[in-house]
Length: 169
Image 1 (cartoon, rainbow, N blue to C red):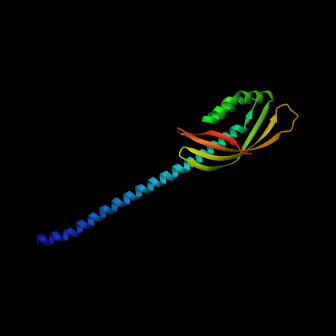
Image 2: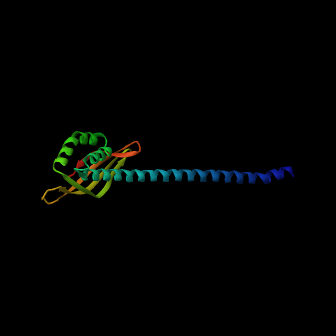
Image 3: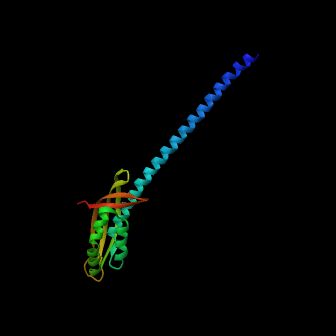
């Protein structure tokens, strides 16, 4: 009777072991799927953040006024890094002087942005915008100008900043 009882419990042990292995496999698959979904969401968030940063920077470049020039320049510098920031820093004096002297009121609009590529902490974004330029106190008709940039956007800490902005003709 002892031998038969042992033989009867043996298949139950195998079924129990198979059930444990199945649960472990299902948990591993669920964990892998969750990690894959998290990675996909992080990549989508990076793509969106890079495009948003490039668009905001373009709008900053397109929106400059003689009464707000210091704040406008600060926004341009705050949304840039690397070579772009160095170039803006180099030309900030001329921009300010010209804007104030000519009483410029430039209002920009972002028309489109699209991600070209994203590799690690660097993205390439195409940005299209336009600006209406007025001169306070002038009889001159407002001018509309159209711009297209290829912007390189770099992750710096938790932020995406424009590291290079090239006008496309």
